Image (cartoon, rainbow, N blue to C red; front, side, top):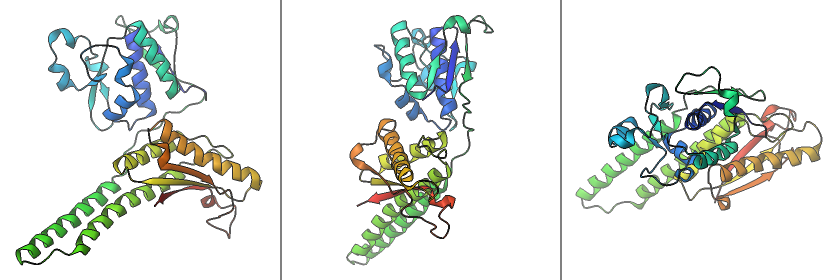
Length: 308
């Protein structure tokens, strides 16, 4: 896959700052936890820190000799979409710098030679980003909060059930098993509804016609799916690919399999989901959602099926 972003830096540590900012451009919804997963502590050797990132409040607590080891100036602070501000470790000797440059390739980020980046920067050095091969970075937008309302509703139901059980206990009545079952149903319904919503968003992020490459929008949706699976470790999923009846049936069968497998591979390789929890299958155009119109776009879809 061709690289999407090139980082021009005047110094090693400024280039590292550019690499992290390039990642935030490509993944605008990233959290502090996402950054620590994308750029693990193993990229650095030694030191007393437990992360490559810290908040301004954490930085102020460091002793004076360690404060200078972090990018803490106003124009160097990382601003996340959720409002978090982070400070990046500044100490990047050549061995560790080579590690993060190699690591950045997995996110389609490449580094220009310093000589090519030496023009147009201030005396303290800097960096700039160049988008390659027609890449257009995603526009950061607000994520849907629908799942929060579902969670609040579930918590309200649970609270009501607890109050009813306490009231029955005061009246010396045995608690009803059916009430406990209701709580379990609410929990199950919650993650199933989340997965159904994610499935809709994934199918809205269409594949390029005739190809199985994941778009950036599709990767963001799969990132949300991974979070649901991490919160619910008992969940196993079957990703089922479907196409419309347009074109050759044999080609459609292989394409549906490749698209489902591409989503599974991303969840395993980039999100750390255990392979035993995921299955992929292609149905081609054999199970049309709209059989009256075999070419209809709704026939081109990927279904997320919860396995028992």
